[in-house]
Length: 114
Length: 112
Image (cartoon, rainbow over all chains, first blue to last red; front, side):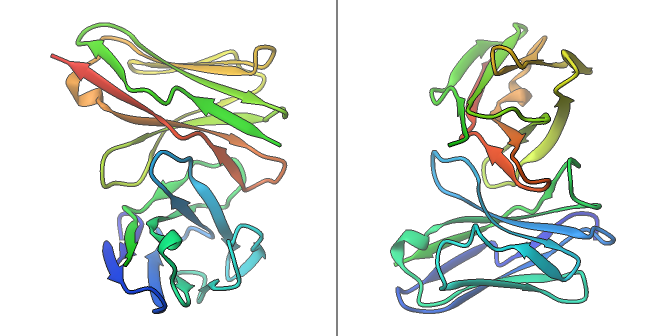
């Protein structure tokens, strides 16, 4: 596609349920990032993929969070047993190779945990 | 710890004037800094990157400066237009080669 695509755009779930967020990066981009954005806060780094591997998972807030990337393309971020504090906008970005390159962002998934 | 600050209050500017946004950082020396624009309900969009050995960078009506002594970057929009109204984010590279440190952003409002 022409840009980074994320789905769903909005997700409302009940506390304790699992959710899965999807990111389809720009074709050919090897680097993929997940960020979390809360109101009034800077983007919080969650995880970085280079190809299918994730050299840095240190940003994941807890072991309820996991992410994978298959075929060097689509990535899914899974949050298990959601909590109200997980409510935020989850943004995915990609870049051609990583490093100091500019990031291309999707429009994000607004997650609301009731 | 690494810290980055942007004006948290909205900046109101009259159309046609120059808008100046500030990004201050402490406790580290980034090799480069990026500025992004974010509209409501959308992801950030890249505007400019400036490296530590560059004092100034321009793109059309945009100008970015990078003062490593003051640990500050200034982002200028000249001849501002209502369409420039958005939140502007600055991001600096961290010690890793892929993780950016982000400011919370400054909301810019250009009044007709």
